[in-house]
Amino acid sequence: LRLNHGNYLPGLHNLLSTMTPGETITGSTIDAGYGSYNSQLVFQIDATQLQVDTSLVKVGTMLAMGNGMEVRVTKIEEDGEKLMWTLDGNHPLAGASYVVDVRLDDVEEAPSHWEYVGDGDEKKSSSKYEVATFGLGCFWGGELAYQRLPGVVSTAVGYTQGEKVNPSYEEVCTGSTGHTEAIQVVYDPNVASYRSLLHLAFNRLGDDIYKQNQVGNDRGTQYRSGIYYHDEEQRQIAEELLESYAVADREVFTEVKEAKIFYTAEEYHQQYLLKGGQSAKKGESESIR
Image 1 (cartoon, rainbow, N blue to C red):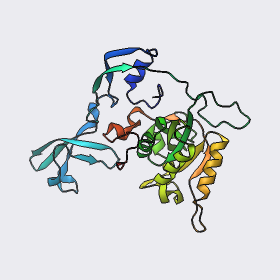
Image 2 (cartoon, rainbow, N blue to C red; image 1 turned 135 degrees about the vertical axis):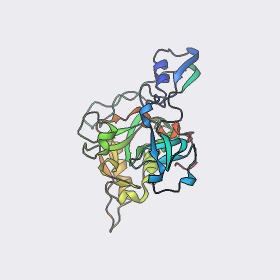
Image 3 (cartoon, rainbow, N blue to C red; image 1 turned 45 degrees about the horizontal axis):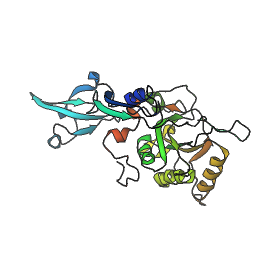
Image 4 (tube, helix red, strand yellow; image 1 turned 30 degrees about the vertical axis):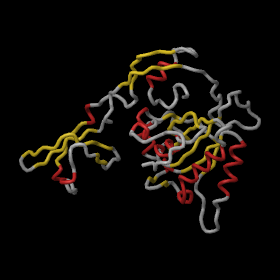
């Protein structure tokens, strides 16, 4: 756990910041990390106006709206000739909390450089951990893949390579800020090499390495793929591995650039698929949905 980074279970971060190594706190109530319940995300629609088979939809069915928002059907009722659905865009656990017992075993030094460090710059701290940043399209699935990788100790999703300071998700989605969705990983190089992190990235991208501003079904500059190196060693490894994908009739569009400031995305994006019930256990092989 990297304190105050990633924002999953922010209450746990707040609790740990008050503790000293060896201390145990029992019965503490912390926020579950799914955000507060927002009544404005509950609304009704007339299902008869939709081009869907309404007989397939039951209370509890999850639907994807045209804007990408996922909603849950919480009520179905007839109103004359209308069939009214009540939809809830809140996570089922929004507003929930945990009661936990926490023991803090140790505190270790984190990396001190989060952007590119050139050969002539001040070198990294004495931390045993290093940082890597990748753009792999929509950041949810890529983050879960790295959470599962042994040696990765922290992940966060956010926005990088753009011009606007601290952009919001909505601003990045317009494609006008210059940012791309990215995953920032803190890892132990004695367990997971940078090369292994790159192999995971390229395996997830597949043929999308050859697509400009597109990964999977997501299109736009905010979904361009990229390797954002933090030092010259990372750059050399990234260029070497990416060169192996070069073929005569296909152009590689995955960019390799210096790591710039990384703006952490909103809390609800952090560890999104883990919050949704998918396993982040180290070595987990279940398909990421």
